[in-house]
Each structure stands twice: as structure tokens, then as C-alpha cells.
Image (cartoon, rainbow, N blue to C red; front, side, top):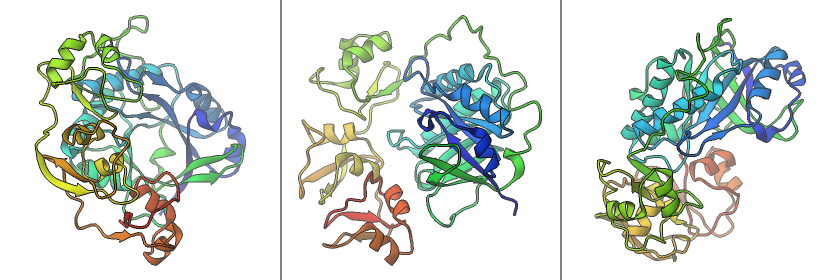
Length: 381
């Protein structure tokens, strides 16, 4: 099977000497372009155009990606339009990918898959024919319905391991590669076919101009729901979406308008889908090393939902032995092999005993460091 080496980059890599990258045997580059939409995060990577232009000049084949935050069909399409606007005038040669990995995305796999398809459909409507999706091995398995994704797209999958446990078009196998021409670590990828190499002279879009005049911004899209992020206030959210604090308080049955939580899902419009089901469907006993965000990820829900259901005034403070109610619709992770950390255990030792890697264990369990605690439950797959 043919294999081609590539890297994916953003402004975090600083100034890159792409001639040295090409000289080291790499053949393609996937560069970050954007996040969010004009009505929401509105982020454009400051190095995007430079990375694409200089990689092209060095003889590398270039592709682009957008980091996805979409929380509704309309929001996903608005994100696609923001991506398209920032692709205009940048000589991307090949594929455009949607990066779907954020832990705060809708835990309903079917709903999230629909939002991703709406994003891809908007790109196709604008003339982009070379489309793809990036996600982690377990995120693709647990948080998306792969069989329902738009047909014909490339699949770019991350699994930081010495072996790849599925088929895909591209495997991101490490985030700590040392590449000539780049200071610090970088993501390294392996393509298993020549689609990322032989993209044709016309590039990804026959007409990559936005579908609206560049001088006239698209009409802001008001989503059905909004997920609270760090630094948000209810008044700020109201101003962002052209509504009032009183309306948001009423729609979401908020008792204290000065208290909202990161991860909380707020209804923005009266016609929005119902707020998350806060009827308890089970319980979970807090273990050493647990965090509310980790529990939310395990059970397919959100921090704000758990905090509201359990009347937690501080979602950063939970106690070992505390019994938390789980919301309706939360799924049980039963059936996945688990290791309960014992005194003296290390991630390396657990990985060796279970034929996996430290990187895989950290990815599966959303660990940001190698620190583990006695009594902590670690998923092995």
C-alpha cells in the first residue's frame, strides 16, 4: 500500500521553513484556517495564508481545515460560510476538512452528525468538491454516526499509537514529531492513497470566492441554542444574539441570571428544541481523581446539565463518595474494559500491561498530564 507523509500546522508552529520540510520527505501540509462563525467565535488563524503560500512554493500539496463548534444546523452552515470567506484568495490546492473533536459538542451522535453534514453541504453548495472530516478514533466511534456522514468525504483519523486500529484515508499518528524546518513538536500524518497528493491543477473549489460580495458580511445567524463558554455572561450572550436577559431567563428557567456554567446549553429562541432533559435517569458515585467535566464526557452529557441537576453552586468542586444524579438520555459506558488505579501504578506500567500506549490512555481518558490517583478508573479502549 502506498503511503505519503504529511504534517498539519497552525500559527502555533511559528515561522516554518517549508523547503526543509519538503527536503525531509514530507509531501503534503494541512493548515488550520478558522474556528466558529462570524456570529460566534469568529477566529481566523493568523498564519493560514502564509503557511499555504509558502508550502505551495516549496512544492508541498496544501489542504485546509476548520475547527468545528456547531450546535445546530443553522450554526454549522454559518461556520461553513466563515470558513469559505477565509479560504477566498488563499491558494489551497486540495481538500478542505472539518475538524470534529471538541468535547463540548452535542453528545447526541445523530444530531452532531447532522450538523457536520450541514457544514459539508454548505461547502459543496459553494463549489467545494474535495471534502473531508478529521476526528479522533474514539470520538468518531462514540460521538458520531459514521455511516450517516456525507458520502465521498475523506476520513482523517487521529490515534496516537504504534498501530492503527481501523481503515481511513489519513492517519494522524503523533502530535510530537520532530520535523526539520519547524521549532518544537508538530502533528505528523500518513496518507494511504494519493488523493492528498494528486489533487489536480484546479484545486478544491472551481470558484473559491464566497457566495456573497466580500464587502457585505453575511446576515448573522441566530442559533436555536448556545453553549456557554469561559468568560460568557448572560447579558453578553443576549447582546450577541439580539435578545434580552429577561428572555433568556424565561426560556431557560434561570433562577439567578448572574450564575451560568461553562458547558450549559441555553435556548436562544422560543422555537428552539427543548432544553436538556433534567429528569434523573441514574446516579454516579464520585471516585478519586474525578472531575465534573470528565464525568460529563463519560456519560455523554454536559457540565452545566450535571451542575443544574445536582444543584452544584461550584461545578469545580465535587467530593469523593458524592452521589451525582445523571440526566435522562445519558448513556452508560459499561462494557468498556476499565483499570482501577492502585497505589504505585503509573500510566506507562498500565499501558505495558494492557498492550497499549501512554498516549492512547491519555487520549481515551481525556488526561492532560501523566498524573493518576489510586481509585481512579481508566478506560483501556
